View 1 (cartoon, rainbow, N blue to C red):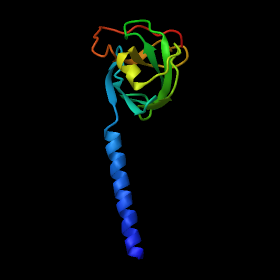
View 2 (cartoon, rainbow, N blue to C red):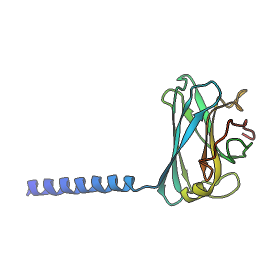
View 3 (spheres, rainbow, N blue to C red):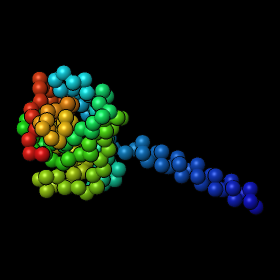
Length: 163
């Protein structure tokens, strides 16, 4: 009897893990490049993953960050060449590992709209990683367009205001 129970628990565990793996593979994702700004070699990508309706994971992965610092990250309205209004402050990028993870769960953007994965697809937006929140807060280390203007190319990035 005990061995039958052990087998049943094992089978349940295996099928539960398979369901979880399948469900994470089926999640909607969009990944965008984050380009280096100026002479700093910091670059990477940002991935938006829909965890459930109205719940989005934003993961930034950068290379060549300085381990001594954290770097503010923002989602902005407008393309990288526009002085876009701050849409949402993302979690800072940890300089030691180059990572930032923000979970937006029914979060409102600065314009009052709820951020969703579908909203991202039509959004004229950009992500900018900054040097710091202090004296050099307008200096951008890495940037990239997201949403509807992901393929919009430019020769530069504007400074950021309104933080």
